[in-house]
Image 1 (tube, helix red, strand yellow):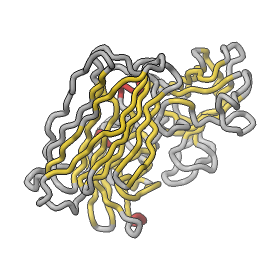
Image 2 (cartoon, rainbow, N blue to C red):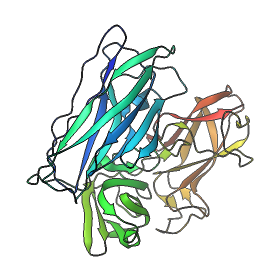
Image 3 (cartoon, one colour):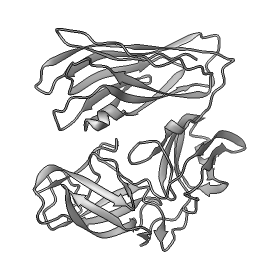
Length: 376
């Protein structure tokens, strides 16, 4: 398979280059990890919208790219057709999006795709962009050509597509972390219940399995100092196998948008959902939810809903840059295994705002930047 994908921005008075991704040989039943890359050449772009379409024989999922994340932008995707998404990249700030990875793409070449089909196409259409001041930006849309090569070898799962379920970032996995696996699995509704996972031959609880996505819980007993072998199976068939780096903790908070940035999935003291129209009061306690905070004490039991087990390493919190008291950090009582609940008191001396930065640190590891809470 060969994949070329690029994006370009044109202002009304100039143009930008078309960057490209190197060729990717692949075959039916393989996953490709790629990206849409922005090269503005001085053009200012604060938000954009476009439709992403692909031909039959391919499946495609997207996640926020590093450039959008660094600019504090959210990625919203809405299905238009069975082979199309409308993508909106926007944020509560007017910051320009810097050159770099705009979107991460996970492209599955269906195993049923005939090698007699020489190419499939991915394209962007109906693209619109604006600057921070609201001026229109003209966008020239790219295309990607996918050519089937039956002699190419590839994988059904790659390290870039093993994501922290809260941040949607790839990297090392941690004991007790909920991970999202995007790959060429082809799991139908009839076989979803038969999907199993293991890490270093220890069963890993499967929380969701359908199509080309599996959510699973890394066993709490996973050794955090050596690489771990992860395997997915359906009945007697191996779906994927991969070796991944490990860490003691890779903490992240779930967010309202599901992208890992923006307003956190946070409950106020009244159990209302925190939002600018429902801010937390200074001095009150909010409940945050995440995963990847590492071992618990007493030790958690894989697959069982949370009781009251605190994180083995204390969590330190800051709200709006001000140190905040952590009332509790540990398993979420009665909720899904691997889910961590962090109860934090909003500092009395913090400056109120609709989007105050939330910082949580476990040992020397902090959650990714970009999660916010509304405070009054």
